[in-house]
Image (cartoon, rainbow, N blue to C red; front, side, top):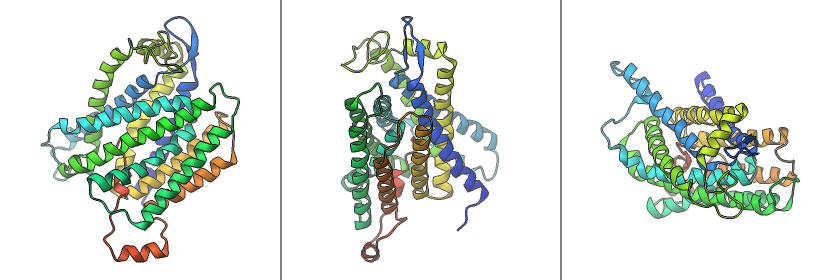
Length: 365
C-alpha cells in the first residue's frame, strides 16, 4: 500500500532528526573550547550530554500537555493524546533508569569511537531483546528471526574488526575505539531491559507514548542532575575524565565550554531539539505504519550518519564497513520479516508467529 504524504513526512522527519541527533552529539565531542581552568580542549562531557537528551525528552511531555489542554474539549482528540490518564507516573521510573544507564554508557562510547560505528553497534539491541523476551515474556523466536540475529552478529563482528584493524591517524588509538564499540554494545543490553520492562508493565496501561517518553525524560533528567553533583567529586579512571578536575564529570566545566563556543552551544541545542522531534516522529511512524517500518528507517539513519561522517572526514572509508553495514541491514530485514526464507516461511505457517518487531521500537532512542 502506498504511503500517504503525511506518512512520507513522518518517515523523512524520523531519518533527518535521528541523524541530526547523533551527528550533533559527535560534533560536540570534536569541538574545542576554553574550560573553567582556562585551557582549551575537546568537549568530553558524556553525562552532561545525556542530561541534555533527557531535557529534550521532557519537551515531549510539554508538547503533550499543550496538545491535551487545547483539544480536551473535542469529541475526538488527536491520536497523540488518546489513552489512559489514570496511571501512576512512577511506573515509568524503572524504564527511565534503564534509559539513563544505557544513554550514559552510549555517550561515553561515542566519545571513543566513530559516529557511524556508534549507530551500527546499536543494531545489536535486536539480539538482547530476543534473548530477554524468551526469558521474561515467553516469546517464541522462529527460525527466520534466529537467522536475522546471526546476520546481525556477523555484521557487528565485521564492524568491530574493521575499527580494530584500520587506523585513520586519529588522536584516539585502537584500544579506545574498540572500548567505545564494546561500551555501545553493553548499553544495548540495558536498552533491551528497558524495552522488555515497558512491554510487560507499561504497554497494557495504554499510556500515550508521547506522555510516557516525557515522564521518562523528567525522571531521567532529575536523577542525572543529582548524579552530576556526585560525579563532580569522583576521580575518573585512566583514559577518562578529560576535564578541568579530572573527575567522572565536571558539569561546571562543560557549561563554561558551551558558553565559550557558539558552535558548541548550537551542537548541544541541536541534540536537545532533535531528540524531541525524533521521538515524536518515531512514535507516529509506529502508530501510522508499524514498528517494522520504524526499524527499517532507523537502518536508513545509520547509512545517512555514515555518509555524513565520511563527507565531514570524521573517519576514512574502509570497504569492510560497507560489508558490515549490508549484513546488519540484512539481519534487521530478516528479523522483522521484510525478507523471508522459503523453508522458514513453511515452518512459520505451522506455528503462531510472534511479532517481536515491536520490542525493538525504542520510544526513547
